[in-house]
Image 1 (cartoon, rainbow, N blue to C red):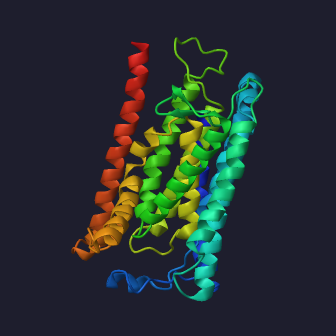
Image 2: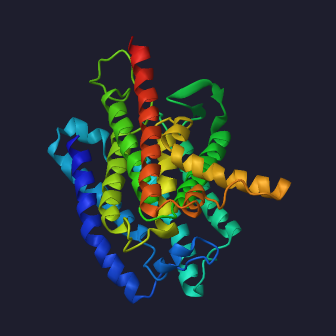
Length: 365
């Protein structure tokens, strides 16, 4: 627990004091966010606000991960041996950094072209596919000494579903789908000051709790004497990385909340989505992540519904999609939308954690 708290605290401090540095650097480089003319008129006042802020909390998370491992040196040697840097950390931090790199390229092109076009949709999806595929192979084909892999060959809900064995190749495909879906879901949510950041904090915090709970009831812990344990790999690593990312996002939110001094950009949104998808795979909660990340799913579905409706009937269901812009055009203030959507995200997280814990109680009972 000490290492998890240290990682979260260090990430928060680095992000809180590092983000103003990023603001000055990106402002000096004239890396301002281009604003679509088709969006709500109120957004035009945000034109020129520095973007690519995801760089700040991605770096903070990586540094905090190192700090968390340094804190582990105070633990007995037997425990340290179980939590040395692992393939789990490589996969999760790799998703965070490399999905963020795809987003960084998109942001860079937007800034360079001075429009909101950026990387083409196909180019962005190809980048996500390559990152997800490469790290998915690592997650499924590189076992630890006890044979556990980062991801599972089964579809999972709260744990692996025994009869849904899709094999290694199928699991890599599922892995890629989850990463792409979640990264694009967070990206669609990122449209109002602090909205995606606050929602991500709630989701990442839930995965820190899930990871730590699995660590305390872990099949890989020879000292655990409980009647039920979780068949996962490196759960303390999962908790540490999730807590570090959550702490980094809290520090970033200080500057990203309305009126935002900096935007996370696709750098942050794609990185966060990739990490959240990886956490779902690593904790064997793939289908549960649909509930935990419910706000991202709702907003993504609003876009899907809008596209299908317009292409089949020529009519729009919403004034504008993603959903948050529909409410803007309906007259809601930006702050009201953000706070209410955070409430929705919190409810989804609470339901997800409730299902996770109730499953444990049912098995123990």
